[in-house]
Structure formats: structure tokens, C-alpha cells
Length: 87
Image 1: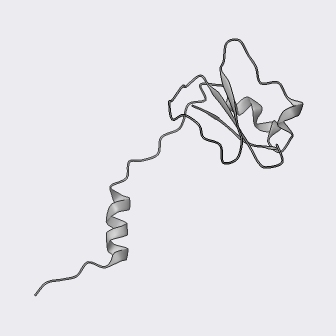
Image 2 (image 1 turned 90 degrees about the vertical axis):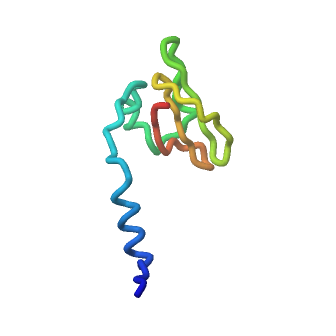
């Protein structure tokens, strides 16, 4: 007699195979900008000669290259900052 594996059982097995999440190192200083979330990006200057940055608009294409020192600034449709992250 064959046993059928149910979908929830498969999902649990797949979740068990996922690697544990590790803490992401703040290599670009993103945590220092957290207080600016919800404000207009146009009110701030993110340029720094020692750190690259990019402003990411909604639905815009971005390269997938990873640069630990790069500050990424995500904006919403109104130009408000929604997130800072390194990469």
C-alpha cells in the first residue's frame, strides 16, 4: 500500500531544509538613517564620497550586484522613504 504525502507535510519538510537566517551586518550605515523613514527623500542628501548610494523608486529596475558598502534608499510613490538597506 502506498502512502500519499500531504501538501502540509511537504511544506514542513521544505521549511526544515531552509538555512537559518543570519544577522545582516550594517556595512553601509543604514541603521543610522532609520529615523528618516517616512520623510521625503528630497529633503535629504545621501551623497558621501566614501559610500555609494542609490535611490530606488517604486517599480524601477535595479541591478542585482551586491555591494556591502552601498546604501540603498527605497521610496514609495509619493517620494517618501520606506526603507534603508545595504547591498
